[in-house]
Length: 128
Image (tube, rainbow, N blue to C red; front, side, top):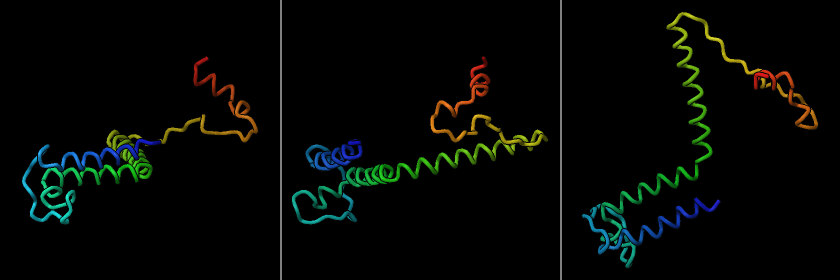
């Protein structure tokens, strides 16, 4: 649960460490933003490696914030791609496409999960 906060804290420590000119130094981007303070001036924050560091952190932050929707979208795209490729493959082979039916998908509405388990389904699944 603390990992997203650790990433942000790690970025802040890295921001001050890598921006210090005596640790790492690169050319300064003239379009960089900054103010006249000690830590956020153009000569410190406008170095090329700091610009890239900030861009990559922004990408990681967006991925952390949108982790659940991204995983959901990628999962559904993978399923759609799988179905489309299977239909194309079966179309090339001139066979009809039939979606796989899982007989274990049916769920009996029971107050206890042990009563939902169908013995014949278990025997088929574990080949007893």
